[in-house]
Amino acid sequence: MLASALKSAHNETQQRILDAAVACVKQWGIEKTSLNDIAKQAGVTRPTVYSYFANRNEVLTAALLQSAVSFGQRVLAHMNAYDDVSERYIETLLFAIDELPKEPYLAVITRSDLSSYVSQDALHNPQGWDILKMLYRQILRDLSLSDEALMEIAEFSTRVVLSLLMVEGPRKRDREQLRGFLQRRLLPALPQADA
Image 1: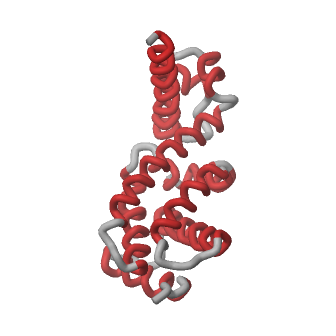
Image 2: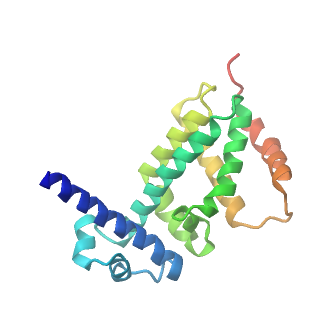
């Protein structure tokens, strides 16, 4: 019972650190957020943070990965409403475009001041790509894809979503126009489902 209580307190402290990291980044930006800021926000000492994470970037990456798993579960629940692989693919991308900016943790990836962190650290994390691979394997489950082809589609689709979120285009599109845009440009790149 004591071991269980200690593990629960350990997990609670670690979660407070992750929550504090995201709060600090939202408040001050990634460049100005220090490990001291994170510790203070979490109500713990700096050595306590180091007992869970090696450095500031590890804390930030862990917070993003935790959020990605949670968001992935929401994506899976959403996409199961669609039987057709093409519709499921496009609707999942639209869901991500709509919902990512609303996610408390993942909203940080859509901020232009964090683009260097996202491209240099978060998107190079193998665990993050494992999450994406699992998601796209489910989204495109009707297609016979090699791991390499699946990862190319996942990478390209993720880059498209991030670009649409972070870079204002020459035209403003409502949801239906965006759906048509994605269908015209992305569906031809997908292999056809086996009959």
